[in-house]
Amino acid sequence: MSTKPTFTRYQVFIIVLISLLQFTVILDFMVMAPLGAMLIRILKITPSQFGWVVSVYAFSAGISGILAAGCAVLVLTAGAAWRSNSGGQRWLVVGCAVSLIVGV
Image 1 (tube, rainbow, N blue to C red):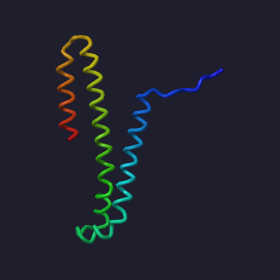
Image 2: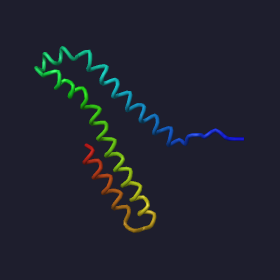
Image 3: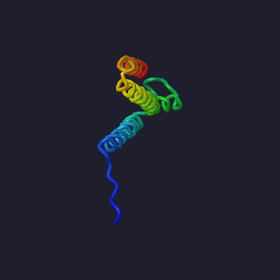
Image 4: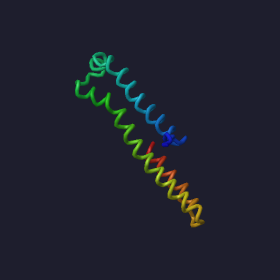
């Protein structure tokens, strides 16, 4: 008799977060694509440059994801150090501050 695997709340949260991110990237393409001809003419850019304008949102989302993963590693490492009373509180604050500054 096998039991069905269940997802934890954290796993469901991550799946929803990734789905929302993908939705915003698709929505960005859906909004920008019909405006292409008008924006190319108004901004006096080439179609290649317009492709960069449309793609920059997806690129920035990817970079933000990488930075967020780095922040998560810092927070987990600092949390472990905090529990061991080795000055982890300071590293937690410094790690989050650095990740916030770099991410913004």
